[in-house]
Length: 221
Image 1 (cartoon, rainbow, N blue to C red):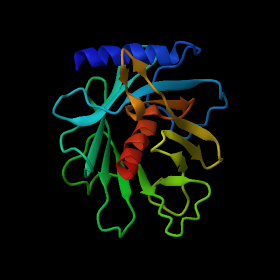
Image 2: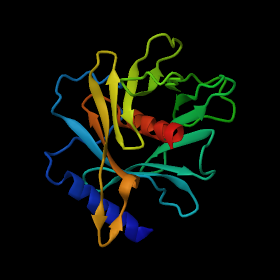
Image 3: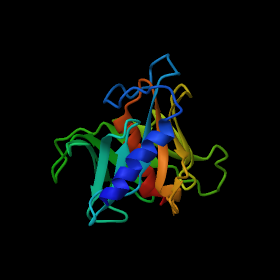
């Protein structure tokens, strides 16, 4: 596993080696309000935990530093996900909602929450787009809402997660984050869909963008 992590770090540098210097990931505004579209944060996402006994994700920045991680001991479809920084500190907690009919809905909380969330205020709801008639020409996958209202979305995720080709669009129809496929082949090892790139535009929170990736993985994997 250590050798795989070293290879992933070198892969991250190769992914970003031809790009301009990137700003480092940090918790910031989630509205993508910056007017400078040229600045962005580009992360390499590995769909695997660094712990042998876990499923999860490992996220590396353009310098090869571990910036985010997810260690899922339960495996598969779970009721809770915790996004941690590289040091293991909880950043966001995502919980699957109950008793909401057929709609796959998740609640996002800041930091780590206890077993009972009655005193915690969610910062976002994310709902899977259900299109029974298959008339969804825009390929909308999910919507993110700021509580308490769910009448008007704050962000729309569209594209195809199974092909690792998605865009996060805000209320002003501006793209604030993208998921792009990255085929990584070296020494006879091909990662396929397990390694991809997450690009976050200036002003949008990289942690929240990664949380959306985790929820897309639960909804469409």
